[in-house]
Amino acid sequence: MEEEYTFEAVKSGAEKLYGWMIQPARETLQGKGINTLVFALDSVLRNVPMTVLHDGEQYLVENYAIALAPDLSLPNPQTLQAEQLKVLAVGLTDPPKAVKDVPVNFAQLKNVNQELDAIASSGIPMTALRDQAFTGERFNTAINRGSFSIVHLATHGQFSSDPQNAFLLTSNGEIGINDLDSLFRVRGQLRPDNVELLILSACETAIGDELAALGIAGAAFRAGARSAIASLWTLDDAFGVEFTREFYRHVGQPGVTKAKALQLAQKSLLANPQYEHPRYWATYVLIGNWL
Image 1 (cartoon, rainbow, N blue to C red):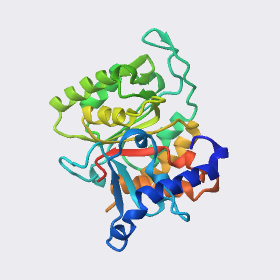
Image 2: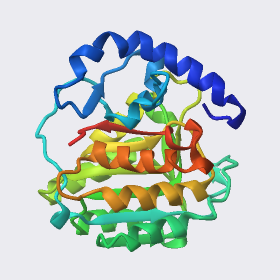
Image 3: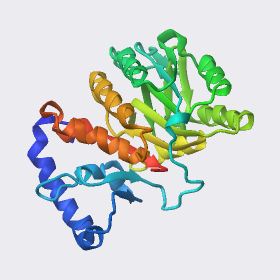
């Protein structure tokens, strides 16, 4: 799914998966007003976006909003309220050269500031930490002092089922997942409001880790967020600007859940011939509370 030349192969595989997973339930799904499907997946399926399943004519995302859940429980369900939306957005153009004194080679994210500008243009109130202003210390201070329903992280990062191999890059180093856990735990003691959505832009799961999706979910939940949107593979950050613009255009609108906002963004991108291949729009998955 990550390569342009695989278009037909992806569709063929997606049709097989659809036949195994969705076709037996079509009679149940049709005609009952069902508009959202929530998957609790196992094994390697955690790294396959369900949006890409194909019935021979359409992708699953064209008919349903889709979310992933570690299980089918939904503690303290709450939808996003437009009047309460406020975003803490951070972006890092030039990643550090080393993490924990080990050299790393993450590419420059040239369009990060355009991505943050796309959030601002949506009209949703936003506090931004850009480039050198995005340090671990300033992020800590910002998130403890402000009431944010969405935290948007446009920076390189890696997620794994092993917390020792999971981190986010800042301008002066990294935030380990255990550190993120502690940071949000302190926030939870200082503030009564929850982070409803953690968006991990430009991050990727650890390659070959079948439980990496749980690593993303665990990071979000331990961080006090009800849900997370993350990418299963990396893309050119110019595309991240397009996704961000479309997602924030829909999120918080009356009757639009997080899963629905993601669906509308993905359908908009799918309708653009430039982004028709699933490698673009299918990389984004919603994990946790889909409301």
